[in-house]
Amino acid sequence: MDDWVYDNISTAESALSKGLCDHCLGRLFGKLGTGMTNDQRGALIRKALAEKGISSDIPKVCGLCDNVFDTLDMFAEACAEAISTVSSENFLIGSRVDPEIAAKEKALWEELGTENAEPLKTELNREIGKLVFPMINRSVEFKNPQVVACIDTRFADVTLDIAPIFIYGRYNKLSREIPQTIWPCRVCKGKGCPRCKGIGRMYFTSVQEIIGDIAIKMSGGKEHFLHGMGREDIDALMLGTGRPFVLEISDPVKRDIDLEELEKEANLSELAKFNSLRFTTRDAVQMTKDLAPTKTYKVRVKANGKVNKERVNEVARTFRNICIDQRTPARVEHRRADLVRKREILWVEADWIDDETFDLTMETESGTYVKEFVSGDNGRSAPSFSEVLGTQCRVEMLDVLAINDHEVIR
Image (cartoon, helix red, strand yellow):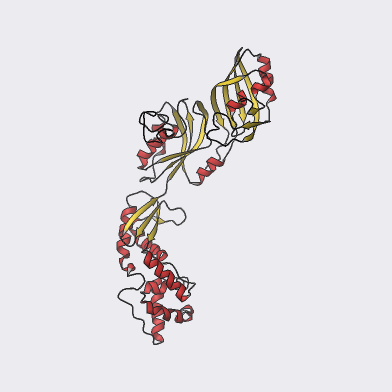
C-alpha cells in the first residue's frame, strides 16, 4: 500500500465521524496517489484503517454528498442528450452542486486542515465526462470547448453554454444609405416607433444584417455581431478588396455551415458584397479591432469658387508624410470625447475636373477624419487642404479604396 495512505491515517480517522462514502473520503486526498479514482483512494484508506483495527464501514447515505455519485449514469445521460441537440467537435462537462453540500465540504476541509483535497465539482465533472464520452463520440476539450453542458445535480437539469462561431471575411459597401452595423432607433431604442416606422432601427438594413441574418438561419444561432476593422461613414462606399471583419454568431445549433453558400446568398444583395469568408477564432475579434492599417480614399471635392488646376496639384503635393492636428469633428462630438488627435497624411494626388470640382486620392493614417482634413472643420483640423489652397472646400462624395492591412488576420 502506498506510503501516502499511512501518512494520512490520522486525518482519515478524524473524517470517519462525518460518515463519508469512498468518493468523499478519497477526495480529501485527491492530490495524492496517481493513477486512481477518488473512490479507489477511499477504499484503500478504509483497508488501511481496518488493518489498524479501526472500524470504517461505508454509510448507507454519505454525510457529505448525499450519495450523489449513485446518480452519475442519470447525469451522464441527461448531458449526452443535451449535447446531442447541437453540433460540435468537442465538449466539456460542468456542474452545480447544492450550496449546502459545498458549504459542508469547505467546513470539513477547514476542520481537518487538509491541503490535498479535490472539490466535489471537479470529481463530478470528470466522472460524468467519462460516461458521456462514449455516448456522443466527441472529444473532451478543456481550454476552448465548443459546448459546455452544465448539470444542476439537485434537479438533473442541463444547460448548454455554446461557444460562438467566428467567421472572418471582407466586405464591400455599395450603398451610401446603410451603416456597417445595426443602429437602434435613437427614439425608441429598438422597440419600434413612428420615427423608425416600427422597425426599431435608424436604417432599414446594414452590412451586418445582410450577411448576419443569413448566417443565423444556416446555423440556428440566436444573435449576430459584426466586428469591423474600423468603419466607414454611412454615406461612404467601401470599395477595393473590402474591409476586414469578423462575424460572430451566438449559440449556434450547427457549427459547420457552408461558407461558400453563405457568401453566395449574401452577395445576392445589391447593397453589399462579401469575399474571403473563413472560420476563425475569438482572438481574431480583438486583433481586428486593434489593428490600425493605413487607408486609401478617393473624395469628390467642391470648392467655394473657382480653383486653378496647377494650384490644386501643387497643394496636393505638399501633403506628403505631413502630420496634422484633428480635434474631434463637430459632427461627432456629441458621441466622442473632445480630443485633439495627431494623424499623418502619407500622400495626396489630385485630379482636376472643372473650375470648382476636383478629386483627391490619398493615403492616411488610420483614424483620420478625411472630410475634416479637406474642409478644415472651422479650424478644428489643421493644416487642412482648404487652408493651404486658400479656398474653402467640402467633400461631396467619399469612397474608401483600400484597407492596407495585407491580410494579417488568420
